[in-house]
Image (cartoon, rainbow, N blue to C red; front, top):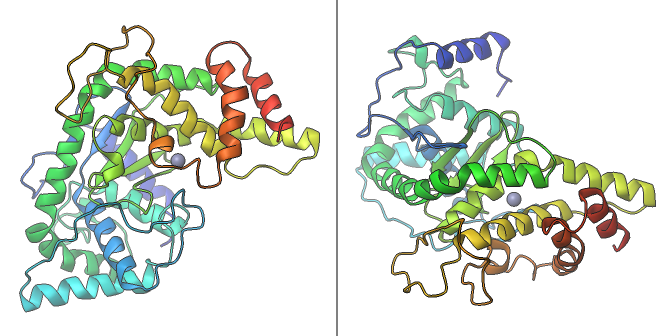
Length: 371
Ligand SMILES: [Zn+2]
């Protein structure tokens, strides 16, 4: 897909910042945006959801699924996602099958996180979430400027998706949003300031746009920059409950942790050492987990929580050894899969920085010299 032309970009800016009426939404909900919330803007958009569902189905069709080299897990499909058997008419079956075949031929071999084509497509589908078409046939405003064949594929698959899967996906998205929203409202600003502080940067002034979708990539969530946008699967078992807050802030950290990566590279260069692959990623996992852990740890005498969402409280005393919140990287065994040395470095040299007992530069320098 060709890059967005400057004219279209200006057009989009104008449409987002002018009070002009937005296109009618042909959905059960009046809006695909939830809120307002601080720090994040959470969306459950129709086209983004359709796109990721087709991509997911297409990946199931190409066998064997190509291993995701940069994936933090080796699983191409979301964990514990129930595969829904659809009862479709012959016409629906053809429309859906054609769309999945198109995705299998054109996109399933490409990575949602690294393919410029897929990133642009995702962002564009997000921008047009409130349109019930993408061709501009009924409303010029809804001409998404996608390749003609893709537009046709998506518009033909749309009624099938809308009738059979979208209601369930949209419900799951909204449920996910409803659960995480109180946590974001209570802790969002504090967490964003703390993380920006740790990474010696500023949190983006604009709210970070987050697309909540039935399916995301094989990791269950991914983030692309310029523009900074996060996509999170609402169905993925790894993203549920209060842990959703960590997933949100981990993903957002991809957009702000660049100073860490630069510092690691700089220290490696000074010491003529190979740049450790993924140390920065292990570091943002570790950091988000440690910063969030005390907030999601229930008070010692609190009755056991029946709901999976744990009430946070920033004013609680420091967590005891009985703490129950387990950060994502530990829970999902990421350190066990080749990051054990990184965990040691982080515990020894980065944790003191988080505890205000070391500086950012010292912590990074010590980690790199101990490599
Ligand atoms: Zn990540």
